[in-house]
Length: 128
Image (cartoon, rainbow, N blue to C red):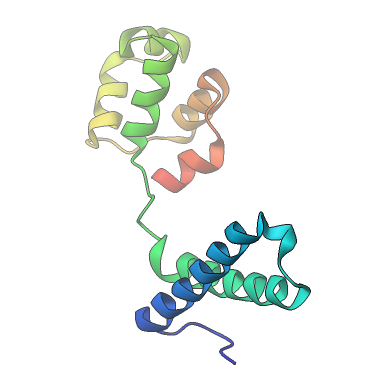
């Protein structure tokens, strides 16, 4: 019995096994219809795949730039960079430089973006 996925080939094999359980559950009418043994094995395989994905597939895969995060929020709120400068009490030049990557964001900027735009602070920190 495998206790950890170490290669892409093992991951692919585990994913095929998971797919078989999904097909079986679909035929039976849902996951609740799986036997306790099948349910336990599916859970074990899913955890193995999840651990592998977190370690080898996700880092960087979903990393989003600060620019993209802020631009999306501005679009959602239908406001411009100029209006944002008023909201967070800074210059449009500073916003432009930060969003273009020409200047690193400072703590004041990140805190203001977090508070005024309602963007998760962890997301902001992960993006820089």
